[in-house]
Image (cartoon, rainbow, N blue to C red):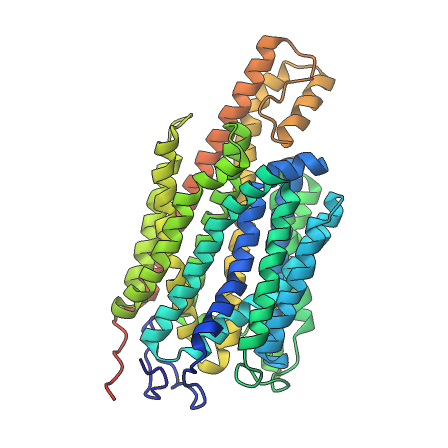
Length: 537
């Protein structure tokens, strides 16, 4: 297939873009190059899900509460989301090859430090280093793939493979994390990530050409005020959502954090508008948000990651802490979900090339929403087979969405904006991941605390404090060691379980509603047009 056809292309969202640059024919080494980019993306996915399944053991080893574990997950996604846009811009300034290799190197160092972390504080700092590396690495993977495959059908298939490998990373993470715990401890999982990062670094050094993907020194200056305001805004928002379970929604620090997030978002948008008006290069070009396909794809990306990371994080805790399964068993129980993702992503790429992005993306949103509704309606103590088919529906829907929304996002913009569009799309996805854990966690723990209110009211001050601490730590029997009667202890344990499962079902209902709203939005914004077939010859 000739992807060097210079005829004008109509992207998958139905919005025309400029013809590909004349220096963008497909090279003979495109296969190894695609593999290197897929491994780079796989690193970030593997790192996320591997950590999720080891969370209970990290909490025990480092004496960390559930809130602390939320930060272990969210500080990575928060840093990743906050720095993706400058990470994409760095690819324009340094060249995509240099930026990719720097990102992989930083990720490797951060992963090694995670494996050696003696305390929660060191682990959190190491996760930040991982996030910085990922934020620089991942935008280059998508933009290099898009630059390599310029013909629409070939691009759709390549992005489908790229997204499918991400699904493999998601699928492998829980199993590898469980194996690491079965054979050694949670640190072994990070050492596995280090080994894969070394392979990615060596392969990337060999196959990514220096001059082709991004021209160093030709990009405008970075937007430091936009970067600072973006990081502060996202940090304040995620802090307010995560810590609301500890301090309460009426706490001055929570209200202050949310007000700061709102003010920061207004200042950020104003700053970006001002920079653009002065002829500078804003971190987030606001004109991209006037492109219907780009808006639709990013809304889908936000909903996709809210759902996926919410399900993976909280069902990991549910299966281990509430159901008593081992980490390895939990990883295996997630295989149907992640295997469906890995299987459906390449299929979605082929379907998108034939049918256009609208049909495939809306179908994925609806299937994932059906899975979340099924999870919200499950029984209090479901059989494993009954849980698996519901999780598989979520995985199938996410698989249909993953490559399609990425393809729509980057195909909706002009070629000179592909790097920024790829970074901004990944930013929306990672914001969704952070919000999925923070927002759904706030919903879940609010329901759990409400269920525990009556049993806790019957306890004395010291016993009440001990039980509340045990609940925050995620203990199945929070009354153990609190010096309370056996009947009261059973009542507390039952209320804790009921509150957790009720909160989990409510969180899944929130995911379903979010996905359905995005499905309607995509129906309205995307055109129901087939992409134009390339002309013969």
